[in-house]
Length: 349
Image (cartoon, rainbow, N blue to C red; front, side, top):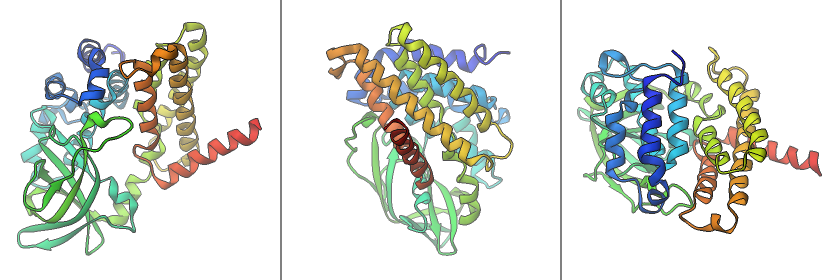
């Protein structure tokens, strides 16, 4: 079966063309509606990576990436809310702790939607969220700077660092409760529609049976470090959507180069040793962003003055491209990207 013929890819295209893309400019201004999330839940896409025995599809990585490109290119805000769900699913699939049997099935089948609150772990040795042992569980203290999908998610996967320098992940109901208070939704230049807030944690108690992962921080960081080096599918999805707004004679050469960078980036993403070829991965990531910026700029230019209207697709895609520049960013990826921009300026100067 080809990737294009995979049932989940077909469902993603149907969802994108029939619902997400026609409503994207309105959603960008008004917020991701619950009806979009219900449609995603019904589609089976939330279980794309989940084990078949729990109701998921265990689809190949190429299918996972293709569906992500389609959704991001149609409505990046909706894509961003639902993509948070995949980390909790993979975390549960990799654990033998009791929470697996309680939540993996409902998450894999799309009965529940999960968010994530763990990116702050990458700021170590600064520790925004600390975790202390308590009777029959754990207590969380600190601030989660970014949490996406508030009011749409059913549960969230919350992470912090223990006094023994462990990374601890546990599931919490995604609602205001004693010890957990959300901020007002953030006003962002792009993806305000994703209902992103910060979370104030003040002695939030979480039972032991909610823990999904507990491991030395150094071990978690070693496994996590390679992930932000790769170019993500949303970059290619939005770039492709932008090029569809440009006359073919101008879009064709950009589309060809985008396809080549995409091919190389995904070959490295599939390499069995994720820690290898770090420089090559970062270079391709930076080039993918350069092409994204060029594609969205071309879409704005092609749209003329109309592109400045908030109901015009080109300006929305351009702002979403700006968001992706910093989404999942680490100090390593930021340095590599800035160096790439500086090299380009030196070579063209």
